Image (cartoon, rainbow, N blue to C red):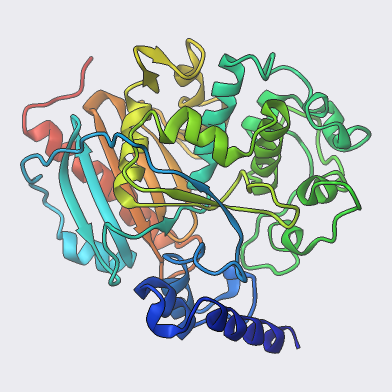
Length: 400
């Protein structure tokens, strides 16, 4: 019945927007393979190919807030093509890649597209948005909306009082060390990450908060790292309640406008109308590159950083161990012991940043192996290393 109802609603939606021929190619592609349920973790590969570039096109599938383009786009000049030992065509095919950009020293040295996508479109970010949200936490601290990362989360989200999150600090939420029980198994329809989207919220309570306050404590706060999209969603709610602004508005004020983003972005909303902090900013590939460059340059606007002194040193280096040699987790950034770090999203989304080499690598994809394709992950990490070596071989060795 749900599939029939959703299909009927889509058809009505098509009629409402004026018919097939009036739609852009991304929306037409989505409608040609329209998903039969709302849980994208279980969509087919063709459905994902179409939807990842058009999640924000049909309000029936997802409602969004718009992040306006900057009135003064920042330059992203072309540089000399980067010479790699990698067969880039084969790499992109293996990743099922929609966009691959390499920016070195402020210049665009590689820009490739696939899956029928191009630089004029928007591709969804999934958990890459987590790093956007943590950047807004830094801005909120600098602006005085959040007094301290050691404050309890319930100070900013009163509806969490009496829950397991009463014992959790903002810093522990940022590093996913709350100790609260959570299941992030994307293949399990009964996992928390699958169920919380379908949770019926308590009247008058944010949909996410309503679900998260039911979770039990598993271990003491601060004693264990556990990846939890739900907790980044809480980080987003915290920023919204502290600033009294939608995340899209705050992102526009602090990042999208000042960083000179060329195209508008969108941010998907929860059932109760707030941006989902742990997921789903839709943006153009070049603007993902600009985001990486903005952070690489210290988030500077008119000579002043949008975050407190020392923020990037903390946020982008290991704050907690994740059980993988040479790696860790910062404030919603995946860290490497060589000083590089990345924002990562399921199905192959990523922004890799290497400050020593002044390097930004953007990936948009739809992995054939699913949300966490282990083969694709290894290949992507190898590609990062190949790009680093290519830069070093040019004589631009990393600073010591």
